[in-house]
Image (cartoon, rainbow, N blue to C red):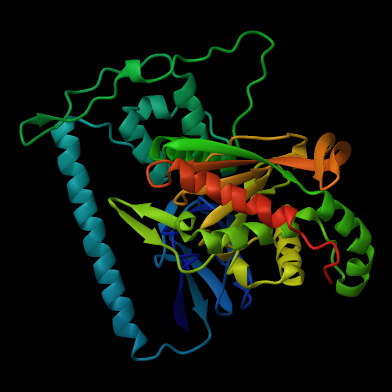
Length: 439
């Protein structure tokens, strides 16, 4: 019998870790090749980890709510194949390294505990605490006795990360902690209660709703973006009457020929991709004091999830696609987003984002930049409005289809001229639409 190490696979260029959300297999159960063993969640998307071999699950290295680094061994699967001589030393080295790391971590924990009197948290036969829960307890000064009183909503009543966050939010009395650790004669930073917002107290009849994991991640991402980028907006109105009439004329033929619904989104995405090609300094990211000018134009498009949250799948090399290709990409990503079937790669590598606030009836919005990008374009609802139409014979009032576009950009690196010129270019591409264009 041979033992196979199931490791956390690489899930995208910026994903370094994931949280175990549930085990689909228990120790002793048989696993088929490519069968899902556990479910994980990153700060981008949820997914499953399949087995690369056929065998029996003999060991789980992590519990639910534990954080796993890419490349770490999650589980051990026993297979019928004979272990090769080359594999044995590798396993021995891995075990020795893991043991050495574990000993070092334990030693460091003991030293820190002795120096600053941090509470020691242990699991017992009646209750298991994951490393993540223990770390939160140590950071917040929660002693063993206090932790044992927290109600758990996890499997078999285990305390989860969400249980800890909910408890801390409603915690009214803080234990007296020891003096902060001093390093290099400099006191460690102490959490100032004045910097925290005043607690909101629930009154009789109020309903308390726990934020979803995705909701918490989005909230943090939005706050981080506002604190990182100097947001400024430019607004412009585009006349999309030609596009409205053209789409109405060709959408049925397009659907029969291509098997795809032609919406306005791919048309707008095509115009944005062209404008980014004209203004490459909008297709950048900031790294410290340097600017990274992106070679590829990868358009993110905000899509709604079943729970009401938004996710941003990415259309890679969008400027290389024709309208048919763009439509297929938009429909595929939007469909898989609604079905919760996006992969980590589907949401990686975006260089600029478009969000359609008009879907919800808004005529304009001020979107928050999707880091590490420097711009995001919000498309407002298309409205039928009276407008002044200029002709060689004179001006007159007519009915036109118009929409507002709101461009948010990072004023650290994008000045008002570039931000305004870019969104003006998008408008010009839309208004110059060829009404006789072939599909």
